[in-house]
Image 1 (cartoon, protein in one colour):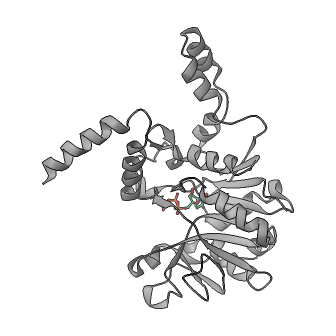
Image 2 (tube, helix red, strand yellow; image 1 turned 180 degrees about the horizontal axis):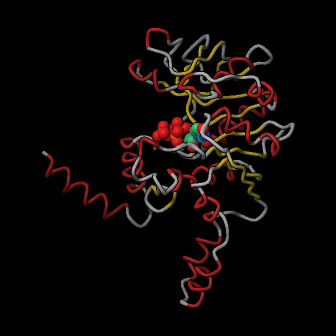
Image 3 (cartoon, protein in one colour; image 1 turned 60 degrees about the vertical axis):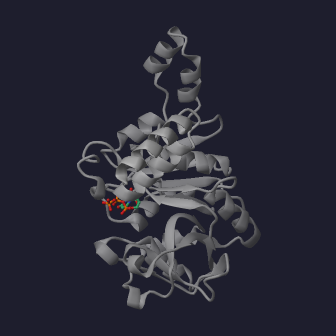
Amino acid sequence: MKVTKAIFPVAGLGTRFLPATKANPKEMMPVVDKPLIQYAVEEAVAAGITELIFVTNSSKRAIEDHFDSNYELESNLFERGKYDLLENVRNILPEGVSCAYIRQRSPQGLGHAVLCAKQFVKNEPFAVLLADDLIDGGQTSCLQQMIDVFELNQTSLIAVQKIPSSETKKYGIVDVPSETDPVAKIQGIVEKPDASNAPSNLGVVGRYILTPQIFTLLENTSKGSGGEIQLTDAIQKLLNLESVHALQFKGKRYDCGSKLGYLEATLAYALKHHELAHDFKNFLREFVVCLE
Ligand code: UTP
C-alpha cells in the first residue's frame, strides 16, 4: 500500500518557548522565512502525501490561515506587481493536496492527538510528522527515506537517531538487536527512560509511518509518562501484533521545540539560504572573531 495521508499533531502547548508561544503557535515560528509547519508540509508533499490532517486547538488558527488563500494580500501583491511574492504565497500548497483540521480539545499527549485523526485516516497506513523536529535530509528527505523502506517492508516504521546517554530521558528509546543496522526490527520501546534503564542509545524523532491498527491500541492506552496518552505505549502494544522497524535516517535533525535547537536550525538554514548565505556568512565571520 502507498502512504498518501499524513497527520501533523500541532495541539501541544509549546511551554518551552513561552512567552513566544502564548498567542502564537510554536509551529508557526519561522526558521529564516518559513514557519516550521511549512517545512514539514513540504517534506510530506514532496514524498507523495496528498492529504494533510492537522490536529489543532483553539489557539492554532494561524496554521489554518497559513495554508488557506489570503485574497486581500494576493490582490495587493498583484496590484503592486510583486509577482514573485504572489507566486510564493499562492504556491504554499500545490494543486491536488487537501487539508483537514480536527481539534484536540485538551492536550492529552501525542498518542491522543494521533487518535483524534482516526476518522480521516480510516484503514490505511499513514505518516505522522512533528513539525518541531526540522530534518535536513539533503537530497532525500527523512520522510522520503522512510517511504522508500515502507514500500519494501509494508511495516510500521519509526525514525530514530543516536543520542547521548545523558539525553535518554527526553526521548522514546527503541530496543533493537543491533544499533549499527540502518533498518532494524524493534523488540521494545520505552518512553523517556533513565540512562540506566534505556535499552539502547537510539531515540525516536518526530517521523513515523504507522499501520491503522495503532488506532484501536491507542483507544485502549491509558495515561503514561507525564500523565499523557503516549504514542510510544501504543507502539509497544503494536509490537505484539506485527513487526515495527526503526530507521536510522541520513540527515541532520534540529530539535526546534528547544531554544538551542531552534537557534541552531536558524543558523544552518540561513547559511544555505539563496538570498542570505553570502552576507550572513560574512556577518558570522566577524561575529566569531569578536567572541574570541
Ligand atoms: P512536545 O511535547 O514536543 O510539544 O510534543 P509541546 O507539548 O507543544 O511542547 P512543550 O514540551 O510544552 O514545550 C510533540 C508534538 O506533539 C504535539 C505538539 O504540538 C508537538 O508537535 N502534541 C503534543 C499534540 O498535538 N498534542 C498533545 O497533547 C501533545
